[in-house]
Image (tube, rainbow over the protein chains, first blue to last red):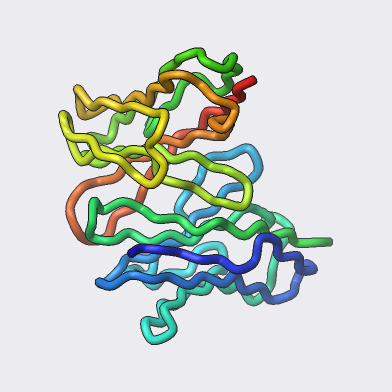
Length: 109
Length: 114
C-alpha cells in the first residue's frame, strides 16, 4: 500500500531559525517523492522533487530509503515561508500522487 | 498559459442537489485526477483518468461520478449532495508515463453543502 505520513500538523518557528518538516512514506517499489506548497489562497504548486536533487527557495530534501523518509529542511526560515506543505509520492500503480495530511508552517517575526 | 482551470470557484448546494464541477487543462496531459482537501486529512483522491475514455476510482469515490470524453476535460459530478461533501476540491493533471513528472493543480472549488 502507498502511504505518506507527516507527523506534525502545525510547526511554528521564529524567523531565522532552522526548520525541518518531516515526511515518511511506505511503498513497496521505487517511489518518486515530492514536496508541494500551498500559500494562502493560492493553488498547490510543486516545491521540489527528489529526483532532481535541487534547492528551491532555500529548501532541500533528501530521500532516505533506509528510513523511508523525505524530510524538508531549510537552514533559515523566512516569514514568506509560512504555508501549508504537503509531501507526496507517485508510485507505479495508476501513477497517481498520494499526499500526506500536510504540515502548516508558521514563521513568526 | 492557462494550465488547469476549475469552475466554479465557490458553490453552495442544498442537500440532495446535484451539480458538476468543471476541470479543463490545456497542456495535453494524459493523467487527470480529482482530490478533496479536508483539514487534517490532506488531499484524498476521488477519481482519476489515465486518458480519454478511461477512468477509475480513487480512495474516496462514493457519491461522485466522472467521465473523460476528451483529453482536455474531466468533470466531477455530485449525484446527490450531502453535508459530508463540504470540502475544497482540486483538479490536477500530469504527463503520463514513468519518470520525472509533476502534477499541476487548479485553483480549487470551495463547496458547501447545507
